[in-house]
Length: 158
Image (cartoon, rainbow, N blue to C red; front, side):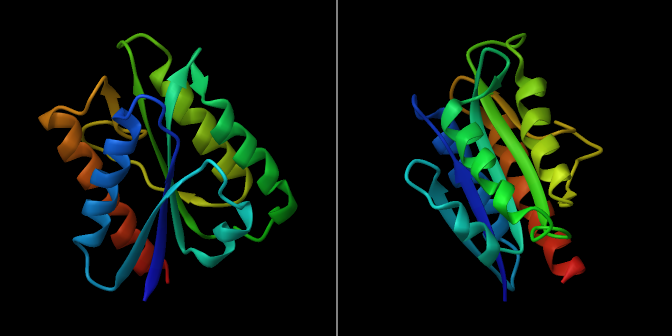
């Protein structure tokens, strides 16, 4: 069975809601075990146990939250060991022009440096789901779709 982690940071709750929706989408595929983890207090060592990792952070000053950045910075000791695993990202923000895509790209850049295979989407939110405030119907569907697509790709690559 393939293992996927949905790791998130959420201060106001929107990103946490998105994480649960992403996990719901991943769980809709058979043959996948999904854990949802708050990044606060999470050991970066856990990453080695997963075949796929989906990271979510609110957008702060056009970038990821410091808690997520710190977590990713600590993964430098695994350089090369995450190669070939599947990765993806999502974010929430207070407004449309607040740096949402730069936040997702910052997360994806770290995953690409690790050699991870990044799952995009030719429809909808191409780089990963973005919610303005709490997830609406469109965002809920985009989150479930991201989880489902990552689960499918993780099984295909395994």
